[in-house]
Length: 148
Length: 131
Image (cartoon, rainbow over all chains, first blue to last red; front, side):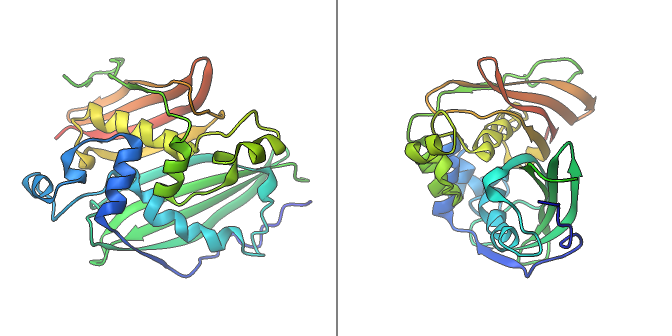
């Protein structure tokens, strides 16, 4: 199957996620992070946060949902059966606090062939309810077995 | 004392995810891809067993980097990784790293996550800020 590149430059409608303290707790626990700023509002406030703060990698919770419609978009036409997650980059801004409403927008930055594989590069930008950037991310998926 | 000059090793971490860790990570993250939680499905698609979520292992790399910088979530400014190998529940994961750049309180680590000889994440770079 030849690599389809129609989606390069395309953006998708924003995805909203409201951050809840129990989701923060659940994420911190599964990773094994025991800093009380992720569990206890008083500890978080003592450390200078508005409230219970999410670990940086909580971005996978509030931003990953934005990728769903992208992966199923016919303009992208990605072969999931042969897909692997190749690389990931996150750059963090304002901390994410319980109660924040995070809006994430996805753009397809590039789709290109290399060594018989298709590289799909997406960028997400997540902002909070005040318009502050909380995380900018680059997601690279690799699909094996494409024609160049 | 945190590693803050070039070539210095970070403390890193070791953890052995139990059999059901991928189920809990699926619940926490919302990623229910059956290759992580259904052994029969994983075998059907040619894997030896269920595999860990790559972003879970990246979460451990982020934890090791933030921990080295004192544990405050604001300390971690940027993290990029290349996923290189599959990783499995019930096998120890070790995250190691060293300082590759240091400019006052701004420090960059190079990190690796491995299960024995199997490099799961390599070329990870983390920018941290020592508050």
